[in-house]
Image 1 (cartoon, one colour):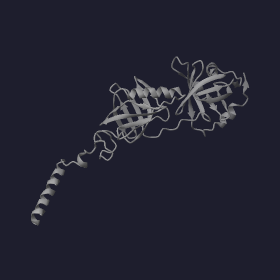
Image 2 (tube, one colour):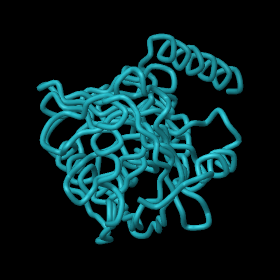
Image 3 (cartoon, helix red, strand yellow):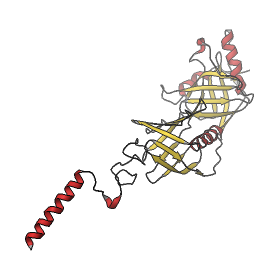
Image 4 (cartoon, helix red, strand yellow):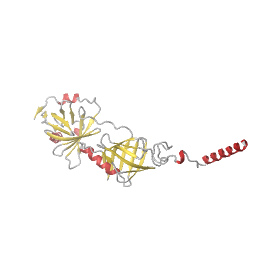
Length: 307
């Protein structure tokens, strides 16, 4: 009798070994490996994990949205996280957003979003959020992951670019030397400053509630109080030098900022100022220095006289 049991056990062992070799033996009580479950061997690809890129379980920082051929830079803090449970959540600029998401191989499709109802004072954040929510809800995306970067692209060519690296914090308004690089009027594309003024026109907002800098020809000092996306400028006090035409033309444009309110927005190293008459001024943060702006404040404030 014991001999029959041994022979039966040997035959069963051989049968199981053969099935396993043929790839016909299922594991986990009939659950296929790589089906998007938390413990599947495909770990992290979501959906058809064996063939798709790793998109789940990563905090993806939104870099930009390109829609209808126009690229929009994401505001600081915008991110998306896609879970292996079929849920996506994040912040697209202002509000927290959640939705279902289907991940099949390299194809993603987002469901109806559920959002908080916070109203941000920065209109650029709200505008980007609306555009991204609309874009993600319009159809299927093809995902491509290359190292720490992910791109979601539609059949029409619209795309969202992400990185898994934390975004560099935006430069602070106060204490940063902002070098002006172009000026526009809100109706036409902004024009870069004349080459002779490249790197010379700058503003520094101090912790004392004042702004100091150079307008192209003269140094300037004025009251500048920032709150809720707006800067209230006081009347400017300037030196009284006379300079060649380009410098004075640029200075006259910049003087439109003062003695009134201007909207401001910071995206990474870029400051955008929009004056009451729709003059738009863009400036870049100078991160070479110590960031305090003390030297600029002391130098720019010397000898300033009120016009």
